[in-house]
Length: 323
Image (cartoon, helix red, strand yellow):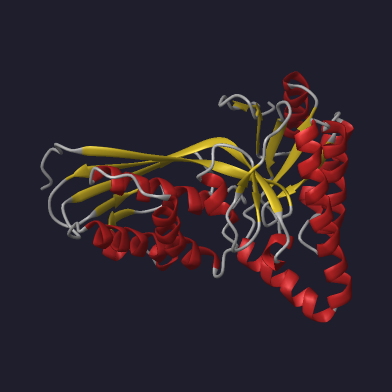
């Protein structure tokens, strides 16, 4: 029987939204991601016996984790080996508000929080290089060959400019972003979506390359819009990005319906975020009150859940289910 713990450590991470650039980022184009105030916490406590893991998805010894969580177990083992800690005597509990499979960076956020908590338990704080090296283990198991944008975004406190195999660059915004994020209620499989784009690229290389180039230019314009505080231009760029994502075959009827509803409700622009084929969409509003109205309208239009927030405030508001 596990004895009462005498030591405890906490690690946290937030979710993320890709503002512009998803899928093109896999092909070396830039993307911009922003923090999303949905949080995950990892609590490590001293215990006895085998390392026990507790979460909403799985509870039990780390060596008995299901195959889909193998990346997490390997991440734990490699981190502890690096820290010189034996693979025993710990209880790890994950408390996450981030829904799975929605393109919000859930797997990366869990891994970041986990690594931070293990380092904290050993009285250390990981460098960015150390953090990324261990999170990469979990992400590779989860997504195959991840671009790295999720890892970078969930560990950053500000919007970032991201290019594959380059250091993320903070992006300063001239004024707050008022963002709505709505969940279709359907899991979006990033791995499948990326593979679908790859297949389309092989079949129609010129057409797909043209879309990817357009997305790259949209991201560049979006950075300037953020720096200049031009939210109306940014909204137009979100709409243009969505057109290219439709062309790449990663949007679907459910996403398109919510995106159109958001625009009709006053959004400056709207698009899917993340892998697509389910998952979430985002909308840009001109005020927090406008964001509230858009979020409410999306719930009326069948969104499974919807949140809204200001990028200059850590508060996250959730629209209530329509009765």
